[in-house]
Picture 1 (cartoon, rainbow, N blue to C red):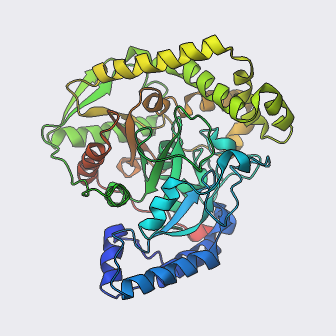
Picture 2: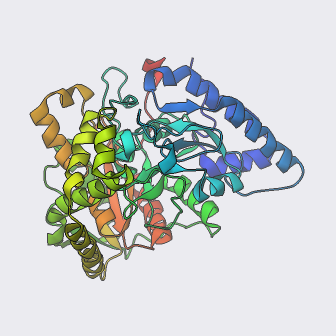
Length: 461
């Protein structure tokens, strides 16, 4: 029998109320999640490290603080899973690799301190694709978590925050922390059927985080719902919680080019039904052109690969580490080995130009609306076919990486209950810095679209 999920049906806000009403305790809550991890994670493989004793000790401390009248806010006692590229004192950080990169990560940084100041209880570290460099979630160095949407077939969880997506979808934590450099929060959110928030660059500190790309790395959240994300965001920001926007009067741009290319039938059907429901509720969805979108990938890939090679010690450092690396990650990184300085400078200039262009394309709109990932989660075995794997990998982050290169904030909202057996995500992109407004829009759309039920986990026992 699967131990119950304490936040199921009540969310973070409901747990906060129950904790203060004395109907539960932080320790009981943490213990319940640790028992769920113990029951399910041998099959799911979401966690790289589980810190049971530390988590229970932190939970007891939260209960004592609350008993003394010290209230740290709505995240007090909420159990959190943290992606294993983020340093947490007392826990190893492997960055999904067998290469020792602890010197690149350093000590616990500002974001984890924010979690702790808010009273979060850190359950452990979740698996990631090596160096956060991969969108499917397949990891040869430290393993590929099992998508909880299907107990019979090992399907990709999406990456690179693969373990965080799986842990959130399976109810192994209250919410999870991920990072997003080209879609690494939104892709696992879409593939695992949960909500994902990619924040604006530099909104949250990235010290103590493995630096895939210092230019594009952002931290984000994977939650059960937009409402949970709004609670967590507000608590971490020290701001008022974003309330649902008015759907009537929203103006959302539907890109006519690129974003709907290569979209599978069930994904297209769910997105269409979601957009129809949003339009019926009073939003204005207008067709727009973003011609620059199709040209983003070669430039972003060169940018990220160049910066990663530099972090690994330049071309000679990369070559020295290559034999211990995931061969797919090494192959994706290799193009950055020989990028000359003048080409890198041109890439930086192009990035700044595209950010200005994105501002113009966003003018008069509240945001853009599109599929998060063009296809639903495929079996891991499909990626043994080299030709099929190349095609799938090439489109996995086609819609998400644009948000990073254009300097936007974005969310993925689960919509598979509108017509797919497998998870599907609807992406909303808003201007950089409009994170609170984005969450207000997401909450409004979530109320219109509804939320899907969680996966049936009985097959994982």
